[in-house]
Length: 450
Image: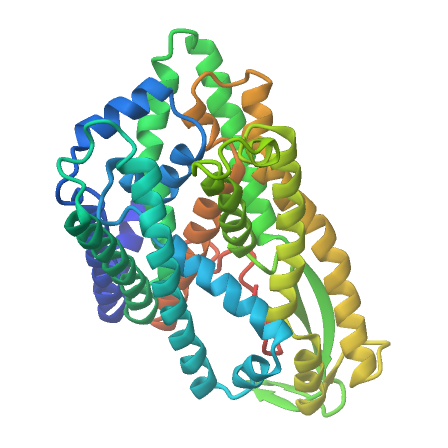
């Protein structure tokens, strides 16, 4: 505990880090306040009564989880950040299929700005489509939820939801640029954490929950959290021989002998993004089943049951595919091989250049397979737990592994690593006793980090 307070003191004395944390907390506060502001002309009490009568489950629970309850309250932030996530998925898919988008990615900062601008415009278009669908299926269709659903109310509600989505996107970008952590992922995590205490209370006070049974649930949950942390931080160390002449204090390393370092290739290089992308894709059948045109579709109803076999099978496969996809666009073995060759470094037993790139690509492919499978298994664990009757409350089983837990673990570790880096830059000890978080090794090449 003494060490904990010392770290808090170090953070307080680090002026730049203190400002970044305060900016982040301020942006999060704005987001949470907005999630409680109900759309004009909407009776939130009628929506709450409807949710209780349905008993939860389905699309409402999932979207309420990602938006911190804003979806079920018909808040101005009801759409949350999901339109932006959907737009990002589309743009990244276009970066593979469309040569002009690929060219923009290779242009550096200027290309990145253009792609970000395209993503923002696409976010507006998606929000303009999702907002009327949300209002029609989840708000206007509830008896007594809308006081006067005339054309003016529809126009104003769609405008408010679209503009609020842009505000959430702006908050996430400001956190990334001026605050600490990845803003978009952090806002999703905050929405998830906001519903976690209520889920625990519902499970604890469920009529079928016994005290001993609840303690066993918590113990298993901690084990799953530990497994998730291991997945996020696991690395495969690739030895690198660094040929250099170094003069450091009383010791001297002769030219040609060099020193050994390694490239930390993560078991899950894609982080939590495959989970977010896959969940956004799985929202499509869930949305469609709430519309009159597809309400009777047996296939969509099957894919819309997030406790069902086919939903989780497709969810699992989508996560594996997105893990490979996101790893391919974020980790570049060719660039890593070029960096090693340019710096005079090499992997023992492997020729520089193309053989090195092929060697690194082979390792990346082999470690990504078990990483993606483990990621998918944890993602579908809530459905397994609930179907086996290991939890009584549906809202609590959502946190029993799955998307929510992986996002929380990944985002928290990433944020702590950034805080740790700022502390080390000012010669403070890190948040961990060793001064360096496990899994955050320094790579001798660009394009990959621990």
